[in-house]
Length: 226
View 1 (cartoon, helix red, strand yellow):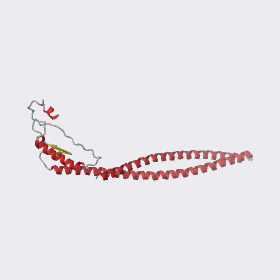
View 2 (cartoon, rainbow, N blue to C red):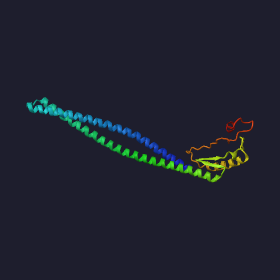
View 3 (tube, helix red, strand yellow):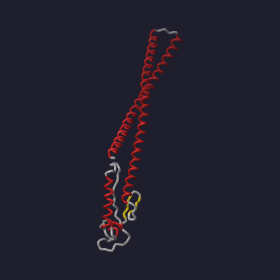
View 4 (cartoon, rainbow, N blue to C red):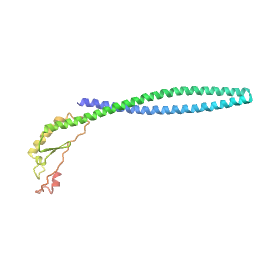
């Protein structure tokens, strides 16, 4: 039982770690995509700007009939710049497409990992809940149906008359017997309790409503605190 619990806990830890690492990688990937998209936008704006310059220059040459060598060189330079810009845009677009594909694949893996983690957590909660019910059921079965013990929620409440005589702070002989039975039952089950289950054995003191009639305790309140 403990080995099974340890394996399940290790699996949950691995799933949580993997999901955290993938979330971090996804954030980095999104930053790269955003940066590449901005670079492409800037290059396209530059391409548009150079294209507009080229068209204006061509228009001037056509309207004036100017065949100056310097103007021809300027047109050639602009054409080269536009061609280079297009190559850069194509290369960056290819990188962006690849990055977006990796991002889509990674998001799918993160979603799948999240589902697996949720399923594992839900299964673990279910098993712990079932174990808690099983543990409580075994303890209830051992104790049996008794008038002197009330079951309130997940608590077993001994009647004060079973443990103490009226006005006394020391557990009586019969009370010691009953507590011994309960302790044996708990000891039999304690080794089966998973480590991650937080459980406590709480003992609350209380008194009956009969006014105290001895010199050792001034009030029932003082008696209950002993």
